[in-house]
Image 1 (cartoon, rainbow, N blue to C red):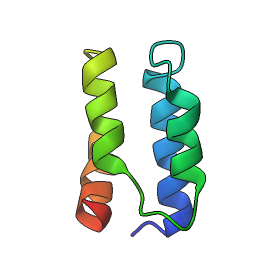
Image 2: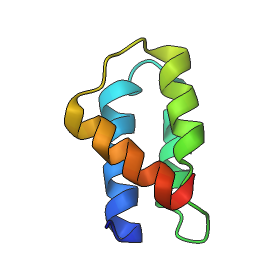
Image 3: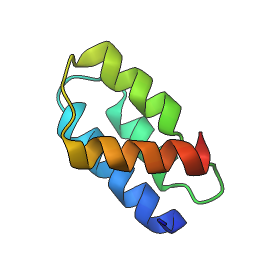
Length: 73
């Protein structure tokens, strides 16, 4: 099970990999992810990835997304 900080770091890594250079609001999204007073915005990040990047996630990333959706979704 992921801690809150691990979830945020993992989600930030997904943002960097799939949205950096594509989404003009990537900085704002990272700020939201890093803000501990907010819930981890997994659905928002997944929607942005779907909007700006048609990608196939790796098995590891899919497992991470499943964990994040279970915890915060």
